[in-house]
Image (cartoon, rainbow, N blue to C red):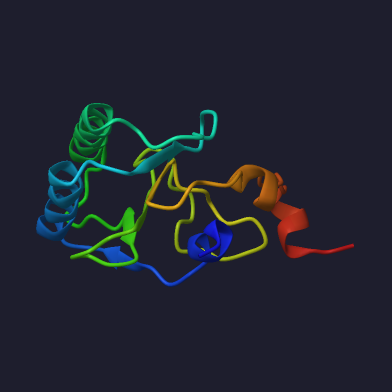
Length: 139
């Protein structure tokens, strides 16, 4: 399946902390053949080694647990809770309007997939900065 099609496909939000931790444990327990694309870094061309992948999942878990001070998760999205093949994780300190649609949606920081990534930033572009007035008045 095309990576961009998967990226724009149907995802379910992981709202409960128990579900989030179970999903991360599923990834940690099955560390083979995953691409982990940190959208703030260079896009990967190869799957991560199982050791590096497990370590990165643990680092992401620590970031989520320490920096997302909410009663619910809401920053992790997956195509399937039990058998995931594509996961989007937003950084807790860079949420903006996660639920907001629009021409330039907020990008997740981490994209975890079985499919080789394509350059999301090149495809969807960087968000444009709009001032308060220009957001509501189009000239």
